[in-house]
Length: 349
Image (cartoon, rainbow, N blue to C red; front, side, top):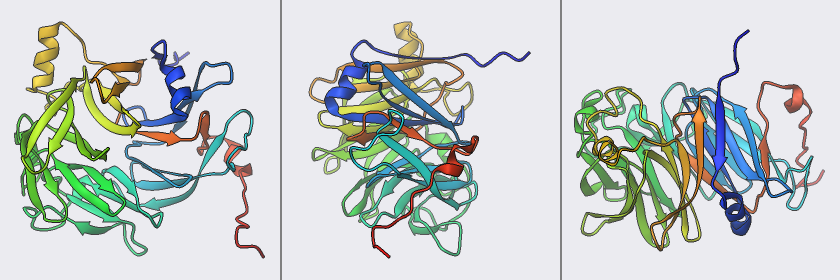
């Protein structure tokens, strides 16, 4: 008899109290284990954990009562089938996958839901930002100036996108390269931030930058190769660290004065070798964590954590689900989705 893979998830003492106080829940992906997790709070104050299986799930985007997620070869749109204030079996949100667009295996990373409800996303394998296409896998809308054509070569590892109401503002790349997987030679200090509108580089010398985000008038970033969370000043091109994170940081979302950041344990391969993060952890006698960290933006303190042990070793993205305390989602491995029917009668008959 095959043993069930070991998995534990443990929140710090005040983690669920923080969720309640902020009136939010969280969603995060692990492509390594192929899981979408929804984290909230049970009526008794304990942690609610709901998971669904999707192959290589990565980027997440939040829209109006929507959740977008990229998987191995598709981009999914989930709709919340519960009305505000409605509950079903104790859950106050039920996210149902209503549309799946087949993109092929193009390695979609960050996703932004635009004002019209359509997604803008990072296509890492093709070094571009893109939207959906009715006739193709995707429609490229922007590439870095040093990329000469849209090619399936992951030349610069374009991975992150900072957006506002107008769309994409900044992107991160691991290295400036126009040859196939050339970014791998620049992991330690070749990372850059690019202004999308001008296509000018505004910061260089970074170590595997990920998850740029605009919040409270600042450009926040994860300098993954050094384990630092901080801000970029685009005018000066300077990085100011806020705190050290004991893991390979990717995925970031905000609520008020807090950042929610995903940490992974580095894989034993060339992508993670020779980084300052590993050297610092070794000096401190510490092991990298797989966790969600809640960082206070005013103090830089990691105030709350959700740590994972066992089969889940790597996370990619995390998002805050506002005004939701206990969410669930439907997948395709049970009959539940057959009976999730919600006619759209908003326009009448």
